[in-house]
Length: 283
Image (tube, rainbow, N blue to C red; front, side, top):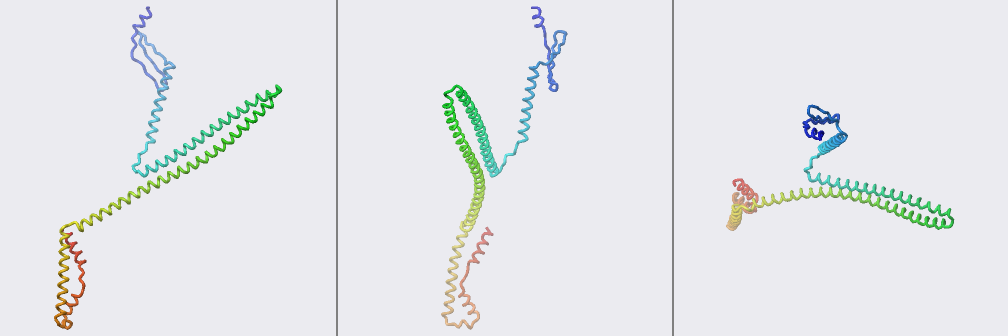
């Protein structure tokens, strides 16, 4: 009872530190007027080691992630190429992993079969010594052995066939990745061509609107056509009057030039183009 009362009067003070370099823990506890220094226990040291190990792993993971950080490509074409290359690499790695697993399984199966064959051989040898059943046991053993050998040969043929098919599959996968990249290039080129075609159509539509969309230009065209018809009629009338009057126009230089000019066909295209250009400039 006295010892329990003395322990209840103890008042431990705050003094607990961990020395990471020396992996020691010192705990200072004040008991009355006496000061006791406690050495670290193996459990505390083990917990400290585990905590420091986990902390080091976290820092190494964060540092590795920061070093391996890559900028996301903005170009869609480059991203498609990287995806295709990653798919091909994944398929190749899966093929190698599958082959390794098949080799391990085959080795395990071969070891099991060998162990089974040698283990089965021992009772047959013992049977021979007991006189009577040795021959039948050996015959049964040889029959089973032949069956197992046939199975091993069939397995070897199947593994060879699977390896050939796997190589062919990898070649097809690589070819598919190449075709995907070519398809991405073609799609990119088609988009560029469609954009150019759209720009050409818009330009043609703009020129057509500028040429025939204005009401003033259409009115001027109609007026020009009417004036052209009138000028042609007047020229023909004047030429007919000169020729029908009986005047010897060939002797008069002015009449001669006039009749010759009236016989020339008028071309209003150049004048019409100049007029339209002048109107556009004024507008």
